[in-house]
Amino acid sequence: MNYKDIMHSVQNQIKANESPEIELKEYKQDFLEMNIGSLNAIMRHAQEILQSLDNPMVKENLTESWLQGKIAITEDYMRTIHDFIMYVSEAADNTSAVKRPGLWENIRKKKERMGKNYKPAKPGDKGRPDPEQWKKLQKENKKDQKD
Image (tube, rainbow, N blue to C red; front, side, top):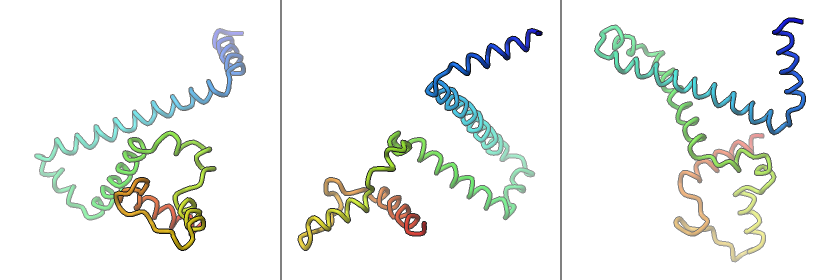
């Protein structure tokens, strides 16, 4: 056996003895590193374009109509990525969160419970979602109705 085979065998034995928690942690660390690398590449490319606006060729290339669509899609994706990373709680990514009833289910139950006395919460009332949350919830409701 050569050195590489021995090292490979040792690594396989170590991995075989690792717990699922350790494997998940390593898996998540790999994704973290890849995603950080990709975000840095996106940032570098965007900065390079913006810093080259004095170049007439760069300005001319930015006037291509097909490019506007690509940039708009990229902007939308980046905003979605940003909002998920910055605002989605850990509980929303947890499978147990799926088991809990959502807003619409809670409203339906409240209507059943209160009967004719039911009045929806008004803007500013405790427990009422803000306008941004409402938009998100309405999109989710439409998606759920399609499925």
